[in-house]
Length: 163
Image 1 (cartoon, rainbow, N blue to C red):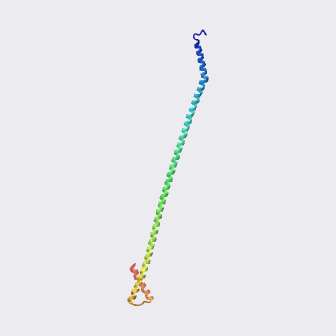
Image 2 (cartoon, one colour):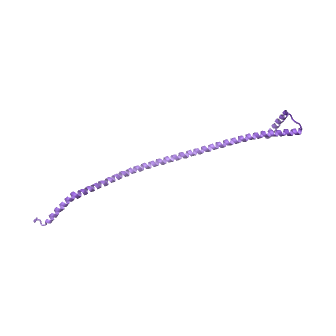
Image 3 (cartoon, rainbow, N blue to C red):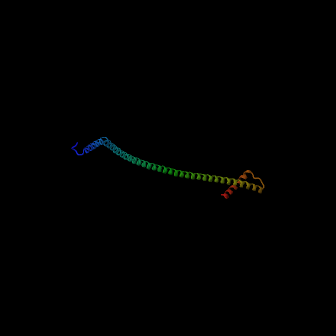
């Protein structure tokens, strides 16, 4: 090794080559493998995240469509309920009008009946009073047939006056 001027240089080169070889074998390969695995893991994570984002977008679109269908269905139910309520209100109003008309007609019929009864009672009372007055004026007792005849004549005259 005397031929070489710097024998330590050769030892350093051998040491350097040996170091590079050992680093390549024990450090660079595992480190490269670790970096490669890490790169693959990151790529897989990115791909998974992209797939999940796409799935989330699909789920969101489905959710929004379902919400729209639900809103439309709710609006339809509200419209049906409103229409049913309006129809029921109209039905109740019509029923109330019919009931009021029926009560009015019944009251008018009762009034007519009471009026007719009152007119008949008044005629009878007027006839009885007329006979009583006439009997006192004449100071005699009328027989039954004469009394009936006078009552019918008086009722006829009184009916013409009242009607």
